[in-house]
Image (cartoon, rainbow, N blue to C red; front, side, top):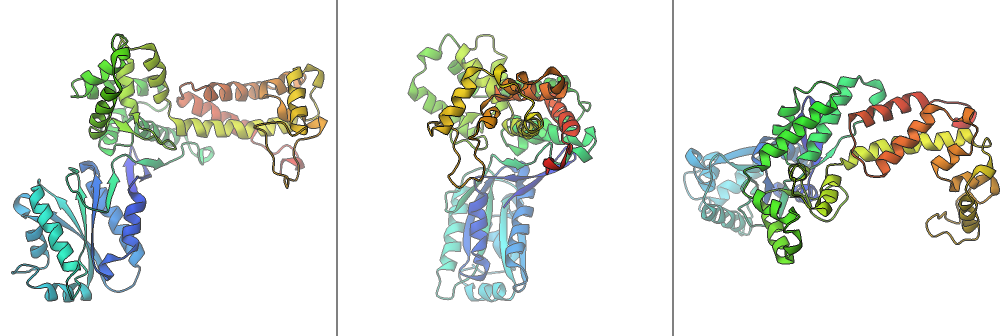
Length: 442
């Protein structure tokens, strides 16, 4: 279950914490059985995208198993309560509980999934009465297969299952297939990923930031940074949570902030969607644009500066560039095999090889069935760092691109900021070094 989101001419799938829960609920085909009620908490900006995604997923699950449709039902304001909207949709003139058999027959002939959305706020009590009505119909003697999903943009409904679609993770790789793309196309993907990262997967903010970045020329690192920073400052200055955030990270008060204050702040920030879980992590972190705004404060504590600065590093982009470096490094090591002078290697490299041979290495591990573990003396370079490997070879064997791979890898691995310049360099190195040198390249 995913949302397909377009930003700056690029479309990517967004996956959410609630994606699997909603997919599993749909897989149960409640429109064919006893009905069901599911709450989808999403943003106002993603309402239409959410409906299209639900419709696409439901039709894929239902396939051609009888007549089936997914309908968007507006409620609130002139559209009336959820109950009256339901009656209008089915052209009922009496309470649905009084005409349950009529409703059941209509849903038997044409199965439906109804997606309710507010065009204006509906009172919570009206929603509760509507949920009770749906549950009553599903438990009646002649079950009415009334399948309902509510797009809850105000996060007011309490019902299981509830699926969260607030902070999404994207399925986008900037460098994938980049060898066949021009700079403008790669730049568009790069900006997409940077916008997604800085806004912490909040679609509404991503739309706003993407519009701000639209006028930045292709390849303009400085212009993009200006746009990201300006958005962060304008969004946070005046925000209700800003004074508390500054107090937590101010060097004059950071030591006085209690654990309870942190917990209270976390609840407030989470509700304001200023916290998120970056891909692969379990703990909550400040959304990067919040860190940006705080880093501009002169009174920031040093410990906070280190932590917040790392939050600006777009980790999926780092992983891509590091992946290129790692791939090229293995090729370079293979090309330099046999050209090294082992006497130029630090003594510690030989010790690491001996430790592995004796079975005492804690981190270098190869399963017993591995066909070629590096256990022989001519495998010594497998235990040398990339820099040590290059330094052990004749200068003529080590080209400038080899060194650039080393320096780019070290820069990224040490946690430094990643920019368009790094992506371009990774691509340049890939295009120049990823070539077949001999039959051994296969």
